[in-house]
Length: 258
Image (cartoon, rainbow, N blue to C red; front, side, top):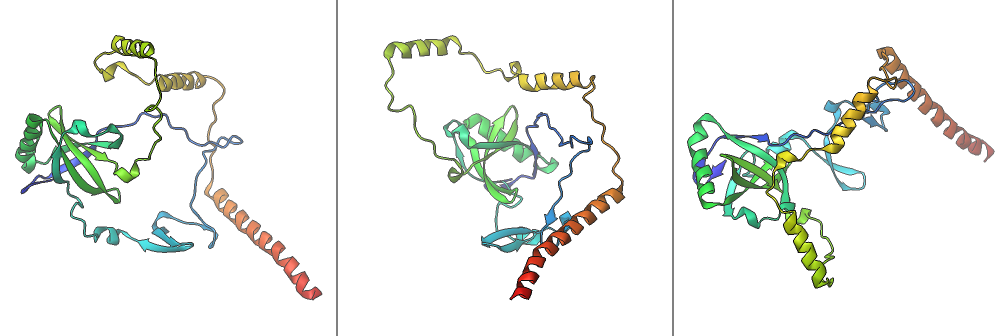
């Protein structure tokens, strides 16, 4: 992390982890888990990860291939570095710009300058606007103090925020109704305590899964021998060859007739 003339060795760690319930795709007929494979329609074969390259389409069907060496060679100063550019009042930033939070942890040799920046942000009530190249893009970020540590929030660029039509600006409201709405807001105003909220949908779904796990609606995945997979590809190839032969026969008949 670059802060003026000070360089602070740090590491980033995701600050959130999702607890979404994820489902696998299961074949209803036999209970086997569905596998998604990458298929080349020209060579008519399954392609492994080491045979796949990144391609940027410059025109229909024409691609520029970009490899890891190209990405490493990019002349971007923010590559592997959080570069602080300015300091702002974090309250001025619309939350719509926030993307992903990360904890910033100092390495042993960077603890003192890390603490210095942390204390400076806390005492001034400010946050740092910085840039960092990550996930194949240069991200705008906000570096802020939170509970005795630095948190880095990646931000969306302005051109990534969709325009939305203004729906409430010119609508006239009744003064009495407005007073009632304001009274309701006052009545329900309270400090934000995130610990009091929970995902009711996830809990209900897990309870449903638990209940069904004791019933008869359980599918055991059958063993799939390797030979069976090979036979499947052979069957696909034979099907393609048959289809090609069927399309070629009408053309041969036309040539004979002419």
